[in-house]
Image 1 (spheres, helix red, strand yellow):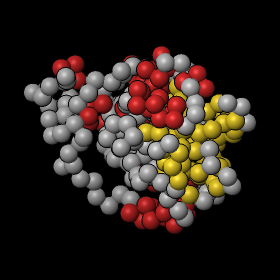
Image 2 (cartoon, one colour):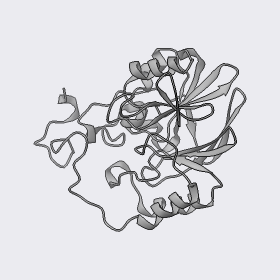
Image 3 (cartoon, rainbow, N blue to C red):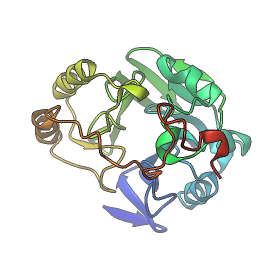
Image 4 (cartoon, rainbow, N blue to C red):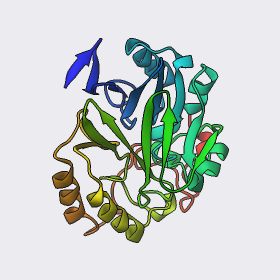
Length: 258
């Protein structure tokens, strides 16, 4: 991996512009993809729009050149900066239809905001994804693959950069599980089986290392072998043990979080 003005370059035309050490420490990884013709797209956007836009500028793109924000899913660590980015001039937000309304409303449960002890900011969803498909931006084609399980509207994006076929998997790999956020073990098992059939060279996932992980098939197979043995109900979320959940009315709700 090389650096451009301090930004990790994962592959030709693909930068890491958000995540721990780049934006907020609780953010998922955020990618900037060069689409040619002076255009780019973000894949996820984390929570810190100001720092993210500084990083996008370091890669050579103004907000107006970012023609879309492609969400892997609608959780706050992946998309809560979207409203600020759109106000700054970035293009619209793409979210799967299964989670679009939760993002528009700022639902504290479906967006996972309760895990962070924060109130989600509603964001306009310009485009609702449904199923698999191809998106075209500039000279770039981005393949969309539905990968539900962690959440009902989780999707992954496949891109080719400098001859390397890369799967950007969000939380489809190594993501957390809870029915409250719509997690579904059976759907997730089918997703892992589907991921095994994709012909990719490398991958990156939402809370993984700041680099590409390879070989793709080997890493997905390992995750599949590890999947679903035991779910730990004592895991402490990023918001700490006092993070709000509706079953504990004595704790502060999201409207009271500072």
